[in-house]
Length: 551
Image (cartoon, rainbow, N blue to C red):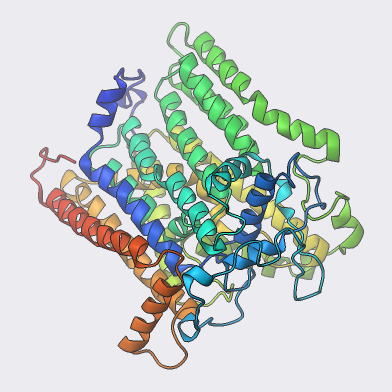
């Protein structure tokens, strides 16, 4: 176990320009790969094939139109019918393969607009004939206000082909996720992980297929994940001795923005407090460090106040921190639901929760069939990599154990929050699968990945330098099986597999995409080129002479 002196406890000064120049070309290529992979995912997963995406788009547009501003109360907002124009599949789970290659799509210039599909009229749900409530008003408004600004910049979006408007919103989300590999690299560097582990951390972000799928869709999680990644980098600075007021204010400000994005950020103030406590503990024998740490923590807390005020508002108006978005009566879970107990299927609920959280962190099956297919097994490979790396770093370093625990704390807290919310639905309605989404842990993804990759730091240098190649290989394997399963359930025509069937699926994918080949061809070519370049670079790193690595 390394001593506290093994991690420098003084922040390194650097000019902004030198920081940009210090980022290796390979890392910028990983950032480019993140963008191009996400752009291709917008074609693989048609508009609406992401959790609650239609409602996310709807709320963005209702804020843009002013019908959802001021912010509506829970249970009062109905999804507009116009949003149906942008999708060809239902918004809920698929009941079987969609066989999109067997369909004929409307030519792009003739596709319906938001107005054509009913505009602001209520969306009537086909299952029960009731209006389709938009429960997303339970969240704070920041993401939707930003999305509304983008929508207003689209000329005449009400009457334009709506699939194009939807895709523009998706592209903005791709940009939100673009910095994630860079932040993973910067966090690993700040924690002084030996080369080339910071590059491996950047690659590991892109290696998670479901993370790139989420980033290719319209979802407030994308803003939360970005803010969580920025906060993780700032916490790494705090853990390595940065107790400056500037860093504290930025960390508090980022936390405030996250609190104005989604309720999962409610754990962040406690996490920041723990980070400053750990920073003090590392330097507790240094004169004056206690006062500097307390002052920094207070600056951070001060900057969090705007975000915390939103949740205080909820308590005053609704009597709950996180109101249920589908009902004005916040006691409906106990009034309408039953009163089930663990004996009524708790073991089955826990089994499903565990399976879903693991599987959906890495992949997405689109139908929640819990099949043990290639994607399911790929998720277990990803889990094994995270677990093994974390155990090794706890046992052998190079990170201090306290720092590891601080970096993993958000993942633990988020898992507990998800389990609590899901169990509440089980107790009320005996719902075995409510709110079980691995994506809810993504705001902790950078911390989890950096810790796992740090485990390779305990290996000998000749082994460690192959880490980027290993991560790239695992990522390529996971994306391959992920794509195979996604194409099967969404695109492949009915009947046995054949090369012609695959070509038909690819052609249908391009045909349905709102912008077709002009948007997809550059992304596909860039993805292939960047993968080749990174693979060559990773192999060169693996074969490099000891102490001669450059990335």
